[in-house]
Length: 261
Image (cartoon, rainbow, N blue to C red; front, side, top):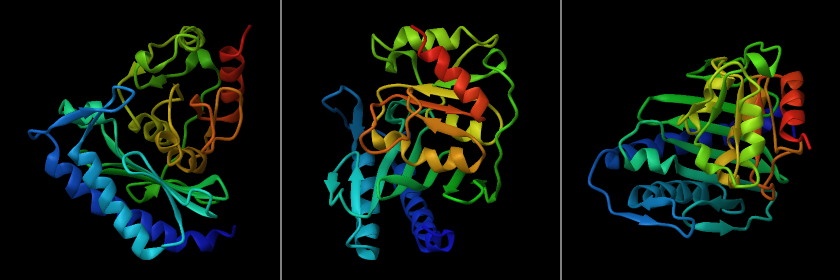
């Protein structure tokens, strides 16, 4: 897929992020009716209305494209181009008044993420990544920073409660391999901060495709590496484990630690 072909999709992705911002901010720190999904995570009218807004724009522009959404399900997910949407990533932060929630917008081509946006409405921050291009933060190039070893790494994870019982000891082995404390609670912003050179590793579990698809192009376009815990490429059918690192050597070391017998 040649780089110039992404231009109209990048324009649309930014338009989607622009359209969702006023929707989510209209409900932020307001009285909301909170429901629970089957996995007990909270959902609100803000999530649903934000995703509905994006669906209408995509369907008008590219009716043949597939859509995978957190709130309204999937449509034509076997299409060549598939949009993967998370209208409010970090709903628990959102419903408790914490501004570290984001909108995640991804475009997959033949199952591989080629475009991604991490938009933080309450903070007015946006990372834009696309295959073959430099990641942009607020319109300027974003770069990961050097980190020679896991012992020197700042590690992000949304919450220690997100890991399965089987995988939590593996995460703890990685966490205790560094001389620094792990940082929790950054939500999707943690990946953006790593892409901008403020952290070194993000390690998470039990994620869905809409939680990570948009992040892959952002991390890779800034010089980082992002896979599952086995080092496999992330796609719609991945197992929910995610590891993002600032460079290939650091990533390999972290994978080895996660997979020690």
